[in-house]
Length: 114
Length: 182
Length: 149
Image 1 (spheres, rainbow over the protein chains, first blue to last red):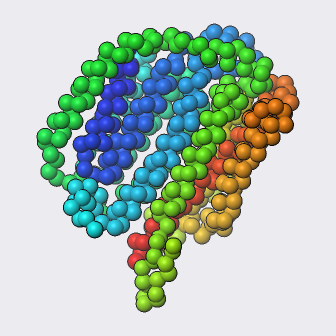
Image 2 (tube, chains in turn red, orange, yellow; image 1 turned 90 degrees about the horizontal axis):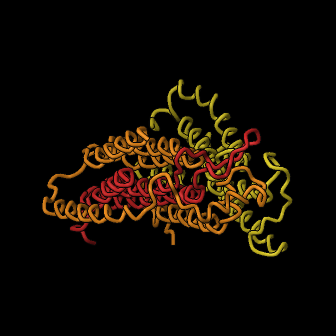
Image 3 (tube, rainbow over the protein chains, first blue to last red; image 1 turned 180 degrees about the vertical axis):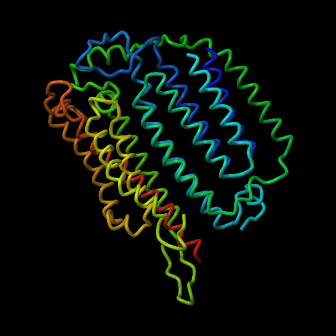
């Protein structure tokens, strides 16, 4: 249970980075850390004690009972690649904002309207 | 088990450093360390597909982030953090963690997942699909709709990046009149 | 990146890149093709193939990389990957339902087994690799024109 709590602490560090920082790159880093924490939580739920990875092998006869859960691993595989696409889009928008306003600070951008 | 604890504590310390430090380039490099720790944890938890994918995706994300921060003047985070705002955020996070500690007890214990659907996938997977890698069989045969949706999301994101970056109305270069895009 | 003085990076980086770029591409192709027998699959292999082209561009400059893989070819490959995946899914209607696994499933652990899974892996690899390379090119190059002004 302490492992789940540590994973949620990582999640809250990322949320702090999104809410309480003013630099746009720090906000993007906060979103990235939140995505890592959620993927980690899925993989933690899927672990079986003294389990093996869910791949059959022609030499040894592995009983099905001793394999870890493969379903959350499939979901996380998709989520990782989608997280990369989200990061690329956020960085593109941040670079355009820097080109137009000359700064990464969101408080200054709010003052320079128009 | 001890390895997972140590790696998780390294990841938390790395995330705190990445968010607090002033220099932008250092924080980007530290995020790389957090991702590498996640890949190692996936390897310890017997998930090799996830570990490979996380490692290479981490490398591309680092390259893209460095492109955004290296060529700009690195003046770091600005001064004057509002103290009241930070305290309110910390208060909310404390309430969230307290509630989460109550609800974690409802989850199944670590190391004993309730494999209601996965039991059937594992038992009949190799005979129904003929594949030896169960994760690939789930991704591309039992749950192929999710892969179709993921391909669509990736396509949309790439179109979005190309649309954001494209210049709309180029500036005048040496007196040549600019060409207007849409 | 030393884009002002000469194209690409120093001589040491260029020599090492000549040796390793082909091996990285081959490793990516291996991970994609053996996706149903050993860990990996289409996503990881596609990202590795995109990384090999990114490596080439970072070390030698963009002209050499575009000689190997021009820009219209990249967008063609991405659309080809998406269309291939959809057509394999629609062909399942012939067997009875959308996304049905209709090809014969041979013996396990061989390369040509498991029905449509290797074909879907190849389609996903083309799509993910070409898409990520196009996004990287857009983010890196079109911004260089902005900063040179």
